[in-house]
Amino acid sequence: MVDFDRQSACIFLNSEMNPKNKKNIPKPTSGQETTLATLLEAIQMPELAAGQPACAVCRLSEAGVERSIRTLFAEFINDEPIRLLVRRSRGFCARHTPLIARLGDPLAVAILYSDLASLTLEDWEAKSKGEGAFARIRTKSTAAQTPCPACTAERETEDRYCHSLADGLGSDRVWSVLETGQALCVPHIEQTAAAAKPIFAATLRKLAAHRLDTLRAELDAIIRHSDYRFRDEPWGSERDAWLRALRHLRRPTD
Ligand SMILES: [Zn+2]
Ligand SMILES: [Zn+2]
Image 1 (tube, rainbow, N blue to C red):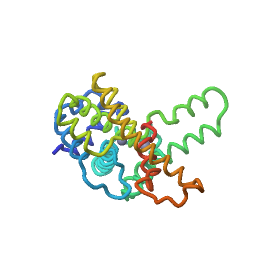
Image 2 (image 1 turned 180 degrees about the vertical axis):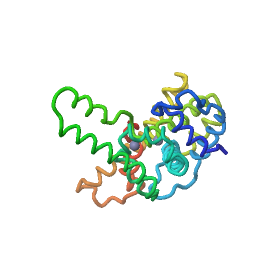
Image 3 (image 1 turned 180 degrees about the horizontal axis):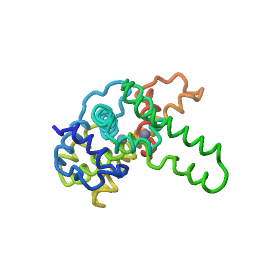
Image 4 (image 1 turned 90 degrees about the horizontal axis):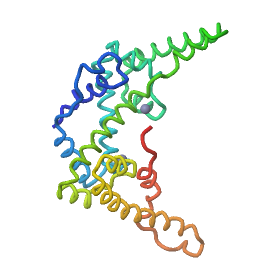
């Protein structure tokens, strides 16, 4: 198994948002085969828990973000570069705030958000004095300068899995898993295709297009049920297609 705690820490410590350790700690390049094996296992997962996305990269990314934030709270909450990183991002985005609340760490949140409250108060004080160029410079300096730390962890986890899959597309076994396992979502198909050789990217899109066409037919079946002429037709697999479509055709990570 991958040493996830170490990997999670590396995401923060190596992040380009981290001004201190930009070059000191190498990015984790080993373990790529393990990364691919983990992804293939997730793609073949026979049954998913309610509400879980079918896409294995989405599932692993969600789990990876949660691990990264837990590591940040448990081991780096008093680490000055990490706190600077959170200050520069001006906190977590609205999409990741429910995760932070669910982790239920009052002390970690109090430490980070006390900093943010101070920054905001300084910002407002500068604005209240706000005349001339000096005030504008100060106001600008306290605006968000980097993305949400959880979004950064998510993007780096997605990159890692999509690149490992792209590199593995020369293997018949990988294609066998992709053909029989859970479908990847459209953004992660695209991310993998962008990192793959053109011939593999075309085959990957062809495979994904077949499944997307099936999903579209189910969505069309839902629309058909709304027509009074077909209202009595029994419902089939299309019943939850609208929920699967929301996950499958989701917007890429910002
Ligand atoms: Zn996905
Ligand atoms: Zn976020």
